[in-house]
Amino acid sequence: VTAIIFIFTVILIPVLVGEFVDWLPWVGTRLIRRAARRLPAEFRDRYEEEWQAEFNALPGGKLTKPAFGLRVYAGARSTGAALQAEIDKRAEIDNMELAARVLSLAQQTADQAIVLARREADETLGRARYEAERVLGMAYQQADQIILEARHLASAKGASGRAMHQPPAELRIAGHRTGNPPPPRPPVAVRDRRGPPGPRARPGRYIRAPAARSGVLLMGSRKLTPCVPLDG
Amino acid sequence: MVSPTGFEMTLQTQAVLRVLLDHPLQEHYGLEISKAAGLPSGSLYPTLARLERAGLVSSNWEQVDTHEAGRPRRRYYKLTPDGAERAEQALAATVKRLSPQPRLRDRLRRDGFGPVRQPGWGVGR
Image (tube, rainbow over all chains, first blue to last red; front, side, top):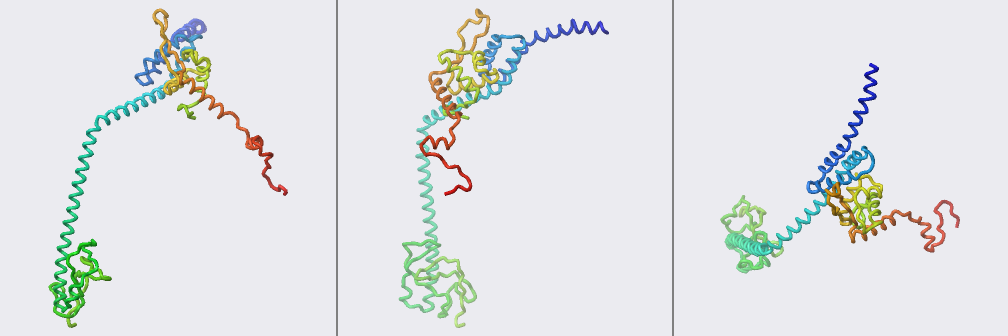
């Protein structure tokens, strides 16, 4: 056993240590290659060559080289981040240049698109205006009908001719104030007990009658007014 | 801390810039800068990459026949003409910022405001 320990200590360990030390530069080279792989692809060759040159020029013993490799490997992530930032910046500039070029090329098309959009908007506006006028026309028709009914009711109840033709100061139809109202119609008193009931104003019914308020005839009101029986 | 030149003025950056500014026209390779600045190679290359990105430093390959020289070519770093000026300004700004500021009392006294009464209780009229 003593002989084996002697052989192991005196012969084998120095051989193994020598072998290990001889492998250290190779480890350093491998570390440099690994470190280069941590960089963005376009910088790998450059840095690997640069680090390899530094590695070869290193003074000192065999331990210095793997130590250099380790340090380079440890700092490679940070180097890669700095280089990646450069790539990103370059890409951003490229994108901006491309965008500027595309924009300048598309300027004519954009102008045409703007003209078309404006035309379309005008047309839409025109359609909208037409629609509004159509609704207003319908409102006038409804108002005419109500006014006709009210006139009939008023005349049936013996309203005087002067009151019949007394114009309202202003007319609102379907919530719109109009400056060009239909011919003036008299206000209607639904609670008037004189004369026969009109076609819609019958006792016990509620109608939406035009209401006069401070000289303004309000048409199309949603308020229901009760009809009072005649001679009640 | 980001300086007006647009890059971070860390201690490593300052050390590298000082080395390059010592001989602004001379080209230096990594190992040389590393030794002069006292930086390990793990910190040196990220710093150089950042300075290169900021446009303060430019690099180029050594003009040498690798077969004849028996070694790979080196990468040389140098301050750009604009970079030298910017580096000087950045270093000067850092030095100014880091230099100890005189206390308020000393500044007032220097500016002619006379002695400043110490705040405290029981100051008589």
